[in-house]
Image 1 (cartoon, rainbow, N blue to C red):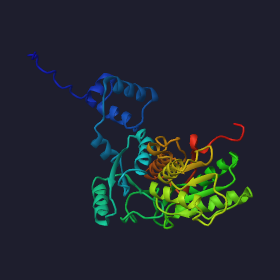
Image 2: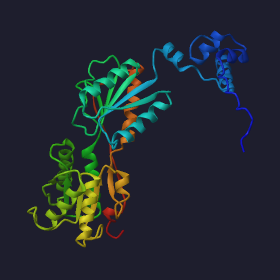
Image 3: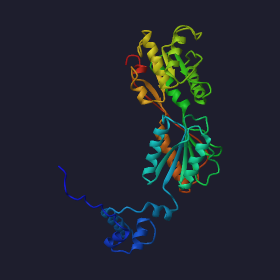
Image 4: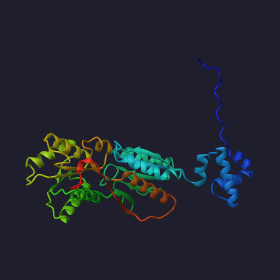
Length: 349
């Protein structure tokens, strides 16, 4: 049945003049009160704000921007095409900025310098208050020049410019959490399978792996380096358990450089009839939940706290936009270990 009723008319936005009239003040006084300006009693300012809220008044964002000489927008540049690292980081950035009324624009520059420059120029044309640059690895710079811009720039999970502010996860600290967990669980022959040697994080994690084993007087085996893939996890198990890696006793624990490698390791162990975690414990890195939770058994993994990292980057940018000075340099934020079933329980637990 088709209704003949006319659609309800669109609701007209409440004007500043209506707020002023309802509050019993001039338009100029209402404007100053809502913008935190002007000289008036605290009671008058509060009465005007309460009136605006009751009437549903929403200030014109363009007028607000012109008044404060800010756009209340921030640009987020990334070359992380799949969003594996940039999306949780962006969630943290947004969380930090939302209470300040700031919106975030995400632009994917891929690995294209020309595309990156176009995005930066577009952001400058839109008068963003600042830019946060992030990527898919911490030892590579985005393919775009962000030096000497007229707005603040913060780097998060990517290589910063000299004398800039950067935020990264503490990879060595995260690796320590994983290896220490194995030690607490009574594992004594701990292997390390990681990604390509061209990644700085591979060496950071391997260094921490060696240090923890040395501190616990446990045998230190040379890490196996390969690819960030499940296929490499399968191949690494063959090397570890078929004597192809030139090792003595077979490991009772494997610390993996990422969750994909770890899932490949677990699958390969299962195919050999080796129980996880009964015979061999496995820990991954990244805590990519879609992988970690779907692994059988569910995978214990190091979480880089990317959302918290993004939040810190967002707060730092807000501080710079507000004119607060900050010392340049890289800030390392701690990781956390998310314990699931793949690493096992402590003796007697």
